[in-house]
Image 1 (cartoon, helix red, strand yellow):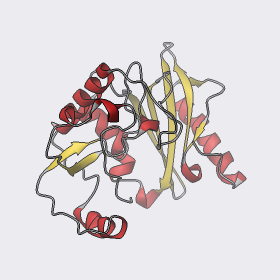
Image 2 (image 1 turned 180 degrees about the vertical axis):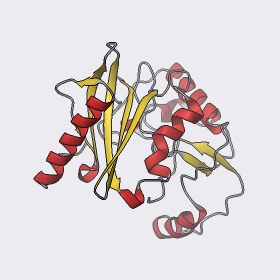
Image 3 (image 1 turned 120 degrees about the vertical axis):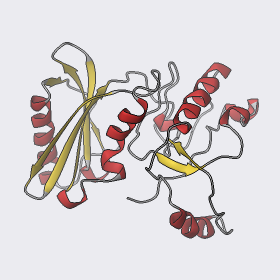
Image 4 (image 1 turned 90 degrees about the vertical axis):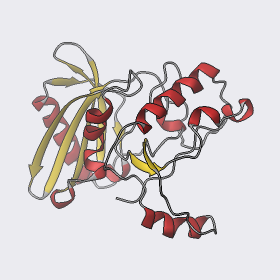
Length: 235
């Protein structure tokens, strides 16, 4: 979670655009729980629809000429590909787009997830006691994601060719098998009971694992390590 942007003008602009999005989608923003994204690019808050459904309203902004592609369309593409993933991801209920001068805005209204995430930080700072059933649910959800055909690419070969030697010190392997993945799977994007997988904007094809996720964790590692997911390539 990030703080409001340091520029007061950006903060005021995003708050005003968030309020306009709520009006356009006929939802009422509820006080408390405001969530800023990096550098004020996104602003989310709890909301309630006209029929009383609990929802989450997220407003994202981008220069108009960059308002397309993987990250911009990630949530919408995920809804088309997976729906609510049998209850494992928050369904996208509605989208509203607007342009003001040279800035594009997208509002995403999603089903609200009230369960807390497993960690406030992507790196786990405390021990977790997760039952075997949780890991089975996670493996099942990831297998359903992997079965989807997509032309979205989360991590490109060119990025691996550059990053793996730089950070690991070995040549990058040539990828011959790809499969769809969440691509940003870490503890701050997972809930416990029930399991939910959050933040789908960067999903796409990754190098296909040589073994299915169901066969990998041991009982010891289950307490501390989620299945590996490569970092998304820069937008």
